[in-house]
Image 1 (cartoon, rainbow, N blue to C red):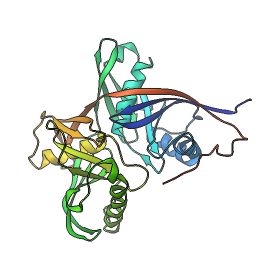
Image 2 (image 1 turned 180 degrees about the horizontal axis):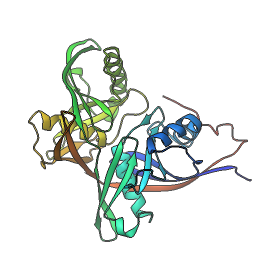
Image 3 (image 1 turned 90 degrees about the vertical axis):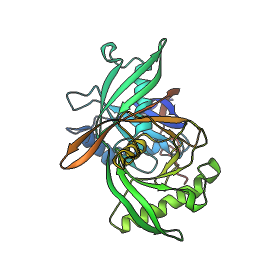
Length: 324
């Protein structure tokens, strides 16, 4: 059998959240930035996203990170992100997976093995790897700057009135909310309920002219060494199994701006798989009159497999099939 199309990937998991990293098989993309290349891909090659995230090759929790040539002179790699329902400007757990995987499979130049830069649609992100023996033990990302958008927005949702919501940016825009008043828990059995609630929250905020990418739900953590338990959901696809990298950056900015976290003070975010991300504010800068926070997120990511996906014209499900 001859295959006209073939895509090579390396798959990783970061605190339980998968990333499928596309290494080859994407046609040439047009653009002067990785953001422009991402947008060109979205317009012309979105079928690659659906083929790799929809069943039978993917699943609702799958996120893709595409490796492309960078455009910025300081970047070593270009990376853009997508899942089964949307494109993202930045993804923390995926960048952690990319940071580990590109090092482990030998794509990072030896002189850059401890630190290198990826260009994302949101901006430049620094990757720092910590080694144990001959493998990457931890990966740290220095994210794009995070900042608070608005404190204490009040909304009515799902029968609850005057619910406080904090809006912050950490590579994506988040609505930060306490889940406990809704009678739900951040456990696998409640995931679909939290997903449905997230969709309602996003709609309410959109109707107010305050659109967000994801809702960040938090509760009391299970582990004594964690600060908060967290889950992110867009209201579509599967909620994040990891504590969320861009969401953690947004939370760090909000905590620091409200005097609840100091610079260089570690903050431990616990995900629904009971695995942690460690976040730290490394500095504060002024940008156009706004405080922005330089944040770093550290976690373990591990390679879970290598794939060579093929697409045959006679395959009835070559384009994939989507299930909510």
